[in-house]
Image (tube, rainbow, N blue to C red; front, side, top):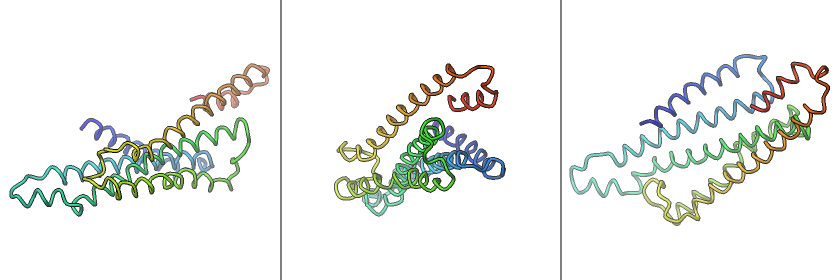
Length: 212
């Protein structure tokens, strides 16, 4: 109940933020497009979690009135909707992390490398954020269908299959952390090397924004 309330509040604030980003023309730029996609991935994750829990409650929370109810509850047909919701949720979790990865690459481009920063490179971020998760979710779905096709795919008896979708999350998180530390080093170096009288308020705000 607590995390359902949390996801619901998150859903409301994210939708509000997304509407603001998309409705104000002066906010339309590559950086904010990446923000918007990150928000959208979290919106889809919140919806997927709420739907998944509703499916689980519907599937396992029914009152058993007769013996056939048990066999119906355990049937693969009854769990299809729940499994679909589970797959969408796992896809959205991966999308969260790879859009964070996109954010990190964009910051790296701005402060260090100046790559993937043009507006025509935005499609590459789309491939990274929405396409990369498919490379891991699809094999995970195949493994679950062939080797662990039980209930709503929420239980992991063989953790090797779980690592198909956990390893890319850990990898993206590690790379994000390394990029973050590199950016901080560059920011502090520029602050030390710059003459304070020539370091404008705009640049200071930009540095502070990147740090946050």
